[in-house]
Amino acid sequence: MKSKTKSENAKLTLREIAAELGMSKATVSLAINNSPLVAAKTRERVLQKIEELGYVYNRRAASLTTGESRTVGLAVHDITNPYFTAICAAIESVLSTGGRMSFLCNTGESIERQAKFVGALIEHNADGLILCPAAGTSVESLQPLIKRKLPTVLFTRNIVGSGLDFVGNNEVAALRLVTAHLIGLGHKRIAILGGNQLALAAQQRRDGFFAAMAEAGLSVEPELVVDCDNNPGAGADAARSLLALEHPPSAIVGYSDQVALGAMSGLLEAGVTPGRDIAVVGCDDIEEGARSYIQLTTIRVQKAAIGQAAAEMLLRRLADPERPAESLLFEPELVVRRSCGGILEG
Image 1 (spheres, rainbow, N blue to C red):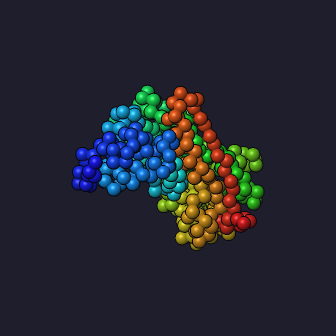
Image 2 (image 1 turned 30 degrees about the vertical axis):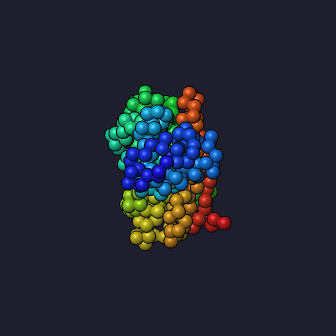
Image 3 (image 1 turned 90 degrees about the vertical axis):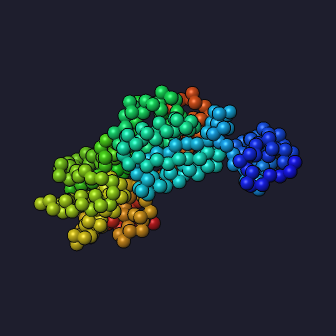
């Protein structure tokens, strides 16, 4: 058979590729789909040939035959947050190794945008969805994907009663652990900043803070509970509001490292030194915390492990749609650095 040029690739068929290689059409198809039934050397030969010929696999046509698009939706509410960047990188790595491509949606905490993305996934026959729900997401708002039985794994933020697979961090334990550390250093007047209370994970983190305070017999004045967005600018503003109090706190717990780093910036601008004048701690252990001028005491969340587990959980769900729902929590770890004035890490 005479080989076709790249300009003719649109007319190439799997049958013709198979003839070029002296293989069956089924073998070529399995190789393209990364099937374990095909030997690695055979797969390599097939991939080299389609690259040589400029062949473009018609995934849409294949999905009509196999029922799979080999695509997965991935939705988070703030892709600019390093916490989600790390998780999404781990998810993409596992899916790619499994022969699936992910399509990312940054919902921006918009339930409407989230719903449109889910609708688009269903319309384009996506195999599944890995979702960190927008704040305020309810079981009712997830009904389109639940009724269509779109395989879905939730991560970080669970939706109780959804019946969907979930993987996340033990959020209650996280802030309980870091707050207890501050109490152990002698702090009694402790403030907490941030956390969208429409999201279960935020509620759980705040529950952990209050639990640690209650266990130590300490009360929390309403003025020391400051709601703010989950970004450094909001954290800086919140810290300045605390300094304006008649009796500022001796320590600040940030809902996240983003908020805590912003709080430290606000304190420094006001001439107050974190770790010396006021202790500051966060949660998530993003890289910026370890590199900041005053290194941030935080809670290490197993971000890569959460992402890997979420992707693997979805692959198991795709292989067995009727299996019981899974739920997995990773335990947090305290990382002590300069910002709380305690013993340094390492």
